Image (cartoon, rainbow, N blue to C red):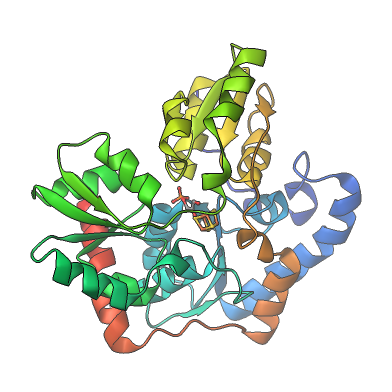
Length: 328
Ligand code: 13P
Ligand code: SF4
C-alpha cells in the first residue's frame, strides 16, 4: 500500500491538471487563468506555495509547492525563486518573509487573516511573561510576526507536543490556541498554561455531531485537526495536522471517512483516493477562501501585496521559527 504523496499536477500540461478535481464547466474558465499563471511564474521567477485548505483549482492546478504550516515554512526557507506567492493566509506569508527576507513575498488578498492570529498581540505576550517569569513561551505559527518576536519558539499542529517537550521545563506558556494547548496537555506531564484563542472554523464542530455520524454509520472513520474542542478530539480515531490527516487516509484507505476540518481538505484528498467516500460535515475558513486563481494571477501581474516585516521584528521572530525548524 503506497503512503507516498502523488506527484504535483503542475508537472502536467494545464489542460489535464484539473481532471477529476474540478467540474468540466469550471475547467473551461479556470484553465486559461492557469495558462496565464504559468507564463507569469516564468517571467517573475515565482513559485506559488499553497496550503492544504486551498480549493482544488489552486491545490491541483496552480500550486508549485504545497503542504501544512510546517511544510510551507520549510519550503519557503528552501526555494530559490525570487518571488513567493502565498496561497494561504497572512501569517503564512509573514512566516515565509521572515525565513526569506531577501525574497518578495506576495499575499493576493490582505484580508486573508486568522481568528487565532487576531486573538493575541505582542503586548499580551509581554504581560504574560511578567505574570509567569522564567516560563518559556511556545507560540503556534498561527500568529503575527510581532507575537512570534516575543516568543522563545514556535510550533505547528504537527510538532506541538515535540516542541513543548524539547524545552525540558516543567511548565510552558502555550499561545494562543486553547484547544491545541488542551490537546498537548492531555499527552504530556509538562504543565501547559494556555491563552484563550480559538480557530473560528474548528471550534464550531461538536462531539454530538460526531456521535450522530457514528450512530448512523458505525464503520465510519473520524479524523480531526487538533484545533477542535477536546470532546471532538476524544470522539476521533486520529488527530493530526492537515498533512498528517492526508497521510492517514493514504495509509489506511478507509471506506468512509470524516475529515473534521476545513472543507477543501476532503475535496483535495478525494482526488487521490477514489475508493474512499468522504462524509461531511466540514466547515469553511472564510480567510483561506479569499484566495482565488483570479487574485493569484492579479498578484503576479501587479506584484501586490508585498509582505513587509520590520527588520528588528523579523530578526526576533526568525529566531523563534528557526528554533522550531531546528527542533523538528
Ligand atoms: P496545519 O498546520 O495543520 O496545516 O494547520 C493550519 C491551519 O490553519 C489549520 O486551521
Ligand atoms: Fe485560522 Fe482557523 Fe482559518 Fe486555519 S482554519 S486559518 S486556524 S481561522
